[in-house]
Image (tube, rainbow, N blue to C red; front, side, top):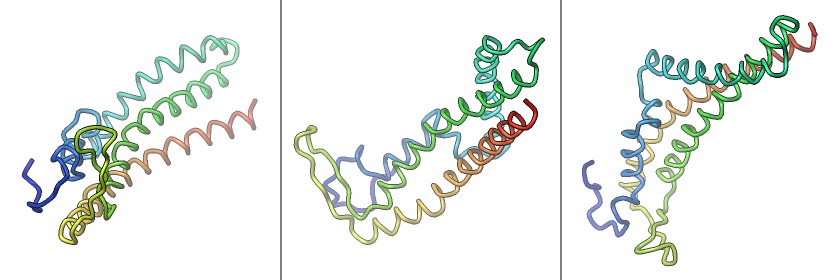
Length: 167
């Protein structure tokens, strides 16, 4: 990562929001947000597959597929959506944290330990740069995650409606 454009920043480099953004963007799980939509969809499908293995095993212990096929399918579907949603929540929370750090006009940092926290007011050039990153880089990632949450919620609600009307 390039050094901050602000040379007089007292915040240690690893605690600067721009550095946290670069680290998050390069990390294994959180880089899913910056992937192309096709690759992102494959990764979510992969998580859903493994969630499905766990959810169907659990649903099978409650509903017999031979006797209660509809309840088994619907409960498995809800389980898959909930587990996938929990997984996505981890990604969302990481990006949301960095978004808040970048948008804030102040940076809270620790000089040598938890007991000596300081707050530094960002200069306007740094604040403008950080807010542009939020607008053009992080907001689309959070929007994609919101859309995925919406799809999972729609599937869950549809499954619940089918359960209520057919069972």
